[in-house]
Length: 154
Image (cartoon, rainbow, N blue to C red; front, side):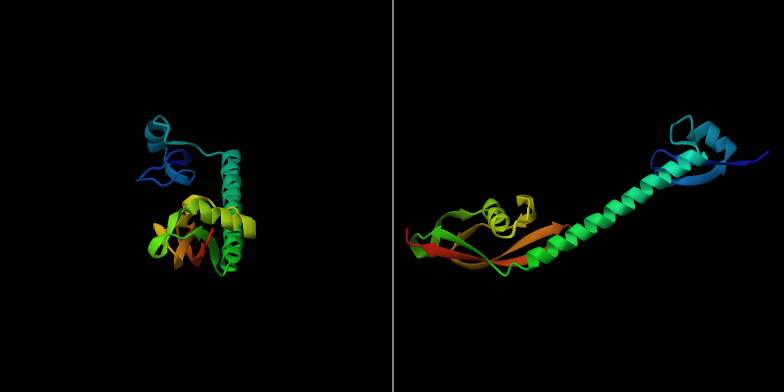
């Protein structure tokens, strides 16, 4: 009689491993603790194949998202500056302020790229001139683009 059995973890467990991994444990540990507490289930060939299929899908999705991020990064880096016209007030101040929504509208209008306003990081912009804004594509990748605020006489 075999003393060990293969089980698939259903939940993340600090001592045994992460969810979806196949581990070889003692029969008593599997049948008396892991399976009754719904931490693991018996590993069959079909279940192992099923888990491997989902792992392959996750890898492909990660690759496609990396490709999309690189394309978005390349297209955003082609933008050399953003120019927005605002009405001028006293001492180089503008009426209102430049918001993330204004910047996302400009990017969508001139480059046809869809960027969420959460990705645009700006400070409170109220002066005429050139400032830099940051567009955060993903948590590790941020691109800085100059923002040129041009006064209008109307």
